[in-house]
Length: 371
Ligand code: SF4
Image 1 (cartoon, rainbow, N blue to C red):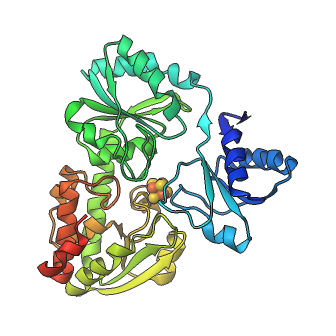
Image 2 (cartoon, rainbow, N blue to C red):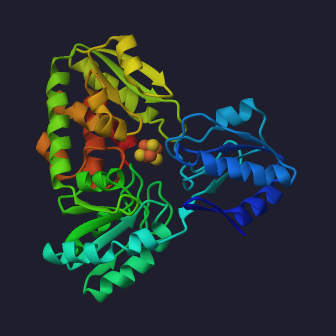
């Protein structure tokens, strides 16, 4: 039986089955902001059934951010991770992922006539349809309703971190990008955040559908602003002499394989380089280390959404290649590779890997970085 808390549904049958199988008794419930009330209700239910439950108040930005260390410190047998699907290939501590879907499709269905009108006015007869995990269970309804207005909605399996058909994450658009040549536009149900990532990886118009806000937005202008902001920061980075490369300690954000080659490339171009490990990336880190600029190998959205809050450039790895003059900015923008090595992987992203390895170590070692 599902537990309903506010707008969310929690599959408690799945939780009970998994706990029985694991034989777990002491649990850590981890939740992002917005789902802490759900976590509390779930704790109440499980406590009543004899489990010992701890509620984590740590930051939780995605399933990239599973609290293995916290669970280990607290001697929990298992983690219940709310709001996301499985991201890591292997869990260090048994982890039960509970997505917490929106149980009521009404706010989304209510928007369908407006979505149909907007798409018809734009001449979009065939679209690529994606959603955040909270809305993904209602996409079949959307497909059926759009069909009545003559709009065909295509979906695709993801292949990076997302797991469900049509599911998008802020760092994974592999459920949509392969549809690019077949569709006139993309429609992403969830929020501007989820849709903006898609707008950055494709030239096709992208529409953000936010059922909670009852809004429909086409994101060309948002994309233009981000591209300008990124380029301005690349220009500032060029002048920087002392650079910090940030490597995340979050299990799913740790991209250690790109840190050394980027450090070598920067050193080859006369920069002084420091590698900084961080759990949270914030202005305090930027100010305290006092370096001229930083490279972000953690969540790509820190550079995209949060750059305005940082007093120094926080470049993504492929943007560094532009700053040191070994890759054209137009290539990154046109191929949708700003978020490299996140978002998706194709022949163009492999080219960037080869370029990084070649610049850092010479052609002989390129093969070890080919993906
Ligand atoms: S890396 Fe960033 S965008 Fe991806 S799941 Fe984690 S928090 Fe979300």
